[in-house]
Amino acid sequence: MYKDILLAVDLGHLKSQAKAVTTAVEYAKSFGATLHLVTVVPDYKMSIVGSFFPADFEEKALDKAREDLHAWSAETIPAEVATQHIVGHGSISREILQAAKETGCGLIVMASHRPEFEDHLLGSNASKVVSHAACSVLVVR
Image (cartoon, rainbow, N blue to C red; front, side, top):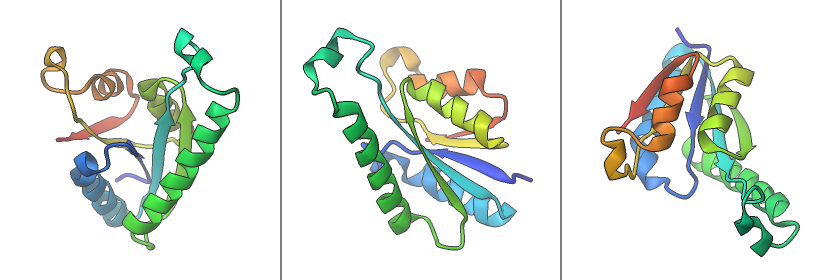
């Protein structure tokens, strides 16, 4: 049913995503799909906050995220599941949607965690992805 599945991975909150990871892996196994793992490094240069970071901060942050994503997937994703690693940079929801478009995935799997009061049912990033995705989205609580 799905040839390509995108799994959004928040490397800073891995415990809260365990069910989403398990679900995505099981779907990938069942459908023989490629699992595209995407994590996003926020863009701090766009705001005044960026001026407080060293000039090479973003490059180092992206390298570290890439390294951490590969290490995490090696420990977590079974070897028989084909994977692709994607590290985005910028708005979390926009980067997830862009990765989904570029990979042509039929399903995005993501966890919804730490919702604010005004979000009620979904976290803000999950809500934006659900609202704007061109494919199916499975939000796992």
